[in-house]
Amino acid sequence: MYSAIEQQLKQAANNQGQSLFLQLESVLDFSELKSQAIVKPRCGYLVPISQKPTVMVNDNAGSIHQIEETFGVFIGLQSINDPKMKKANALIHQFIADLRRELLGFSPKAGYQPLTLAGSNLSSIASNGIWWLERFSTTYYLESTYDQ
Image 1 (cartoon, one colour):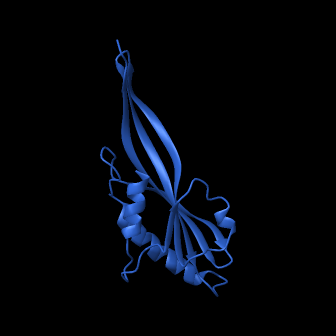
Image 2: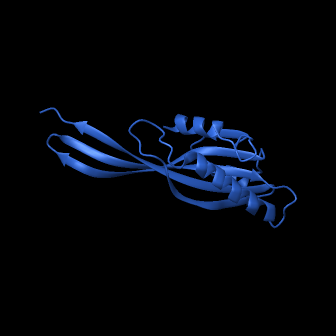
Image 3: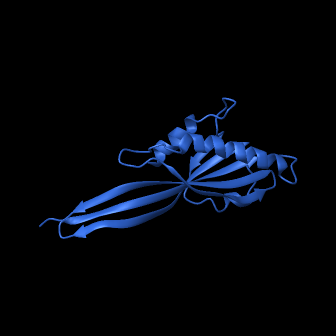
């Protein structure tokens, strides 16, 4: 699933026809990133956040779980000479509109529901821009059967 999302984002472009991300990586931990300067004008990190199972069926024949998987796109946007982050505020709103256009409704893998928005928030302000976390969710089913 994550490779399909990463591929979708690497092909994404903004309204000016530029690549949405100049750097995009999949990572497990982004906690140290948010205390650092932003390395490219538009960088992103694909991060798994959670898996929430719901038991649909569980009996002697097997079980079916519905799994809601949430991931984040941790975004770094440079905004130099912007002490009050006024330019950054405008940049992030346009950027997340472009990002949402690319991912909302995208099905990352056969059997997975189209992506939905799961929330977003400012993560931190860096010396040269802002870090933003945009979260998306999808749902799939996990089935197991038992030998009788």
